[in-house]
View 1 (cartoon, rainbow, N blue to C red):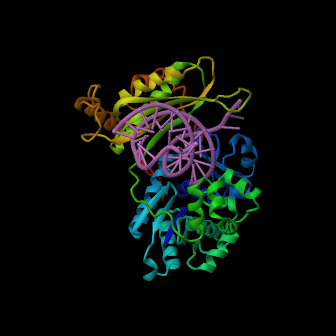
View 2: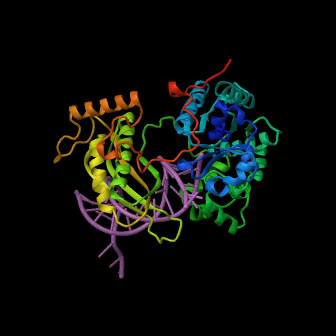
View 3: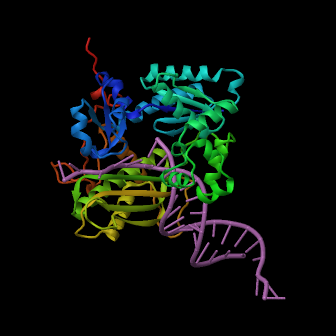
Amino acid sequence: MFGLVDCNNFYASCERVFRPELEGRPVVVLSNNDGCVVARSQEAKALGLKMGVPYFQVKAEFEQRGGVACSSNYELYGDMSRRVMWYLQQVAPAVEIYSVDEAFLDLHGMQRHYNLAGWAGDVRGAVRQRTGIPVCVGVAPTKTLAKLANRLAKVDSLAKVGSGVLVLDDEEQRREALARVAVEDVWGVGYRSAAKLYTAGIRTAAQLAGVGDAWARKNLGGVVGARMLHELRGFPCSGVTVEDEARKSMCCSRSFGQVLTRMEDVTGAVATHAARAGEKLRAQGMAARMLTVFIETSRYGNVPPPYSFSTQLTLPTATDDTLTLTSWARRGLERIWRPGLRYVKAGMMLDGLERAGADQQASLFAEVARTPARAKLMGTLDALNGKFGAGAVRVGTAVGTAGRPEPWGMRRGAKSPAFTTKWGELWQVRC
DNA sequence: TCTGGGGTCCTAGGACCC
DNA sequence: TCTGGGGTCCTAGGACCC
């Protein structure tokens, strides 16, 4: 059996843990630059706010109805996520951290010793007590069915008929559950497949489980679709994957706080991403062999496509060095830069990741990329930024005009403090 | 005025290898 | 008339996930 633990309205719940006055009120969390709604409390959902809507479109009405908007505080959410996941790792034999707010648990063999519904209910209560985060738990013979059970557990706990836990462990329960879920809510069915399925007259998960394998292979993405069907029928096609260190690619990108037209400014943004990418690589002990730089213009308004320009560079040897990454990124940017356009976003993707260090692939022609002196310099850079705050020491390219905020910087009008990760911003309790 | 930031897996074709 | 059987790497794009 597999379990899926999913945090309810995760970002909104994180904000509420430290701001209990938000309890009972409609709360939304906004994306970077306070752009879109990316999380909603139950009350906000009840007001009809949709996931992903641009906030400016709904702001007036939302606030007038007593809603509170928070700028995203990923430092806080990341730390709360670690706390939830850490607890799950103490109680389950194997845990796959699937996303910031979700984890699959490997529960094989446990039904012999535990009543799974009771066990899952205990886990749910303990997570709430230890972290303040409400979760729901779905348990079923496959990951796809566990996701589906979780979804139903959420619905039922809202309707106050359930406990926030649903276990599907016999054939009748499985059939009943499949009949209650719309086909577009099945894990793995996206916008495109849902449209195809509706055209074919397939509306529920139960109907989907009944389509032929050949049809699924043809219309639902080949082997991916076939696996999904098997899992819906109760035959597992994938297990719990514990290790997550083997990242295959990495991306650092961000929309600017304002439109940029000068290459100098966009270069600053790209250099900032290169520095971030270098930090992430070093933290994971990885090095990258391929680097893609991209810049984007707005896809809203009257400007015709293309909106995105990118170029991929293959480095002579894999690197985790910020200075090297920065200089290649600049080269890439020069290649794709078109003057006269209004840019809104830039980013960097790294591919071909390998372990950094002794077993790293060397180049026959290039100089040694990672001299001990440079590695030491990067170590010092990370230590200083760790101690004095991100960006305390930077490459000159990644710094704007002295005394002025960086032109590419984010807007975050309503950010909560880093309650759990900065001494200066600890939660204050008055007695 | 104002529209997120990450990822994964799979397919298919071209160029090349023995 | 009939024209092998394995591979790799790279690029590009589609679909999906949170």
